[in-house]
Image (cartoon, rainbow, N blue to C red; front, side):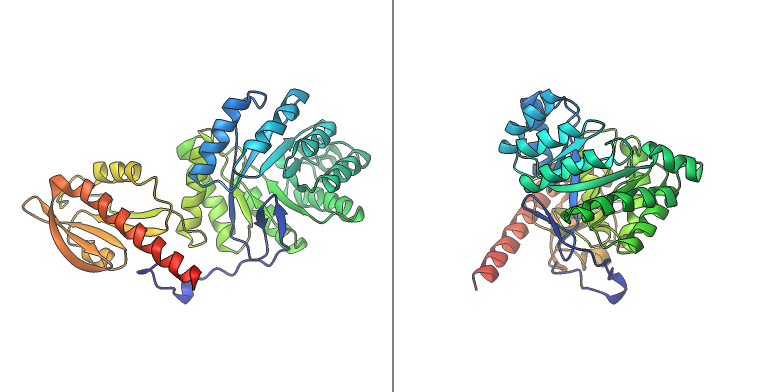
Length: 375
């Protein structure tokens, strides 16, 4: 980013984990933190499921999880996996045979829940299928579905019970010479999830999948996820994540990226810095930002844009962004390019003009990247 210098106090030292592969996507090690989501269609409805997968991928999803509750779903997975632009994770609960069928159908990863997948013999069958078909596995511990013996031992879901569940299944995988796995310890309670993840991070070098499960609707779930995932990511914990929202999966992807972008861990698309607006604003900030978010969704190149209503903070913010607009008087504002004042523009033309400037800057950045890659 041309106008966001790296500062030592911005650095996050990520936990060192083993690198595995989910299809073509690396997870852990030095790989970028990947963003996942999950479809909410009936899996056997292939057109609807594929449409959702493709929209999620276009929004930036690196991996998409698909539920496989029955044989009709695992049969549909064959076409879904073949047509998907990103690796597909098959979500398995209760029926271990669905995991075997999903591996045969081309799933890149099998998510199994220790609390309901069955005994060690069944897990071994899943491991054999994963080996035969080059699948990774996610051990998905959930506070709401812990094994009965752990609930009896600890009395209630707690970090110790969740970590013990996960480590028990890690032992089974490793005893069967299977190491291409990641693990999660999700809970809907932010404190419980955070404590479990911190303990897990100290107990294993396996890649960690982050999530606050059943976080809620778009607004409440976003806030809860930002708090829970944000603190863990800040501590360097997490190799891949899913934001669980009662909303369109595309919204989960957007929120996931915004969390990572706010911590400087991933950069994709336009990062808009904007003020909340007040009586000093020289234009309608809220309406302008809403329109720009919609008009700039197609930009994938990482870059920054400041939209500030007046000259109190506008010039200072614009100095640190690729493109900036600061509201002024007499119905016009100042355009900043590359951190420098460029020209004034009428408010009536500002949205179209900003879109043009952002698209031009994105093209310049992409051209520079291509030149650098060719050298």
